[in-house]
Image 1 (cartoon, helix red, strand yellow):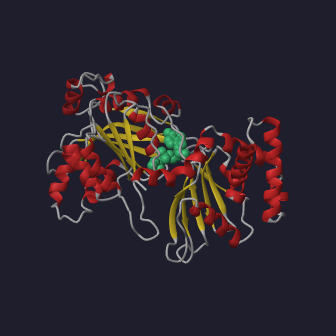
Image 2 (image 1 turned 45 degrees about the vertical axis):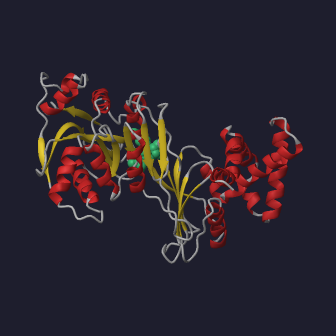
Image 3 (image 1 turned 180 degrees about the horizontal axis):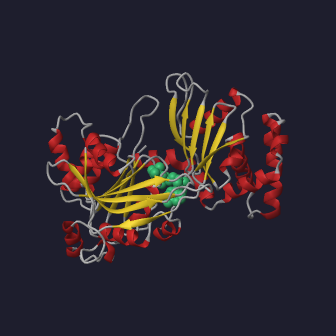
Length: 448
Ligand SMILES: Nc1ncnc2c1ncn2[C@@H]1O[C@H](COP(=O)(O)OP(=O)(O)O)[C@@H](O)[C@H]1O
Ligand SMILES: [Mg+2]
């Protein structure tokens, strides 16, 4: 069998399911089905009875309002819907609830969810450990992997695209643990402004930086909205450019016509076939990219990315996990040192100073809102100690009893070199950032 056929054969099943699901058929019926049946009553049935009962209900639903189907199509559709509904058992209602962004199972008796950025414990529980293991088996066998003593941690994806991580005892002391992360919805810049994540001035500033091919880093903790902001920023990239995105699991949903999405791959059951973010970054340089967007830098790929930024691939954007802009710039240096090559720290600092132009820091506030708390320009050059100039900062008001977070964005005059670069690129920036404004000059500080 040729390569093309082999890949096609492997994907056939997935595609068949996805085609139906693409039209929302399966997930729509799964939701209807779960609305229709009494889950407590269902739990009392044996697996065979449960399936039979669900098939009957789906049959009625399809007859009542379904598309016109041949007998074979109908049988297959019923089976797929019931599979989807039974798939994750007690977790299904949580999965079909759009407001739930994350589901965390810490052993059979404890389930947490994230909703609007906040954690809450829910009443959902598994009957026993065996039932939890059954669910885990369903999740991982769908992606051709297995979980056992020898591979106790697995990443997988659900048919709907949700990311799943499974880790079992003895590594997980609470019992088998599942973390399901919903495919994040996208937010446009306008929506982010409405949510108060940034203001009009910051939006215009970032737009100018992206169009002028500044290299940007979006920094923040887990779930602070880095990927979401990266996605929104990508809308500023001109349609004429060839964009390559590199991620651990493809989340970015770019709107441009010319986008190549690359996804890394963990090793298979035999420990083979791994493709790292670093491999993909290196490969992407041979693909004539105009822009490289890296979902998150976590290791040695940072060096390759910096080298790319310094050798003609300006305009790249990446995210990094860090708690402040200082933390981010230091972390980039540390990550870039994680290669087998021994590179003097001064040389790495040079790469960071020359490569990175602007760092955008995100924070998740106690009320669940996300904010751009700082936009900083890298003011240091060559081998100097890192220096950051604050162009925008969010000043928080003291939090009142209602726990609502408020405050205001403060803007500063940009460093002249940055302003000049934007001007040369034909970009205008809002007055509050330009030299002629009344705003104070961007305060600088050292990061070390
Ligand atoms: N600005 C925002 N306001 C409110 N919710 C947000 C915002 N940005 C992201 N989110 C939500 O927060 C969750 C995590 O976002 P994501 O971008 O994946 O974070 P990160 O990449 O930092 O881990 C998602 O459910 C997303 O919809
Ligand atoms: Mg992310």
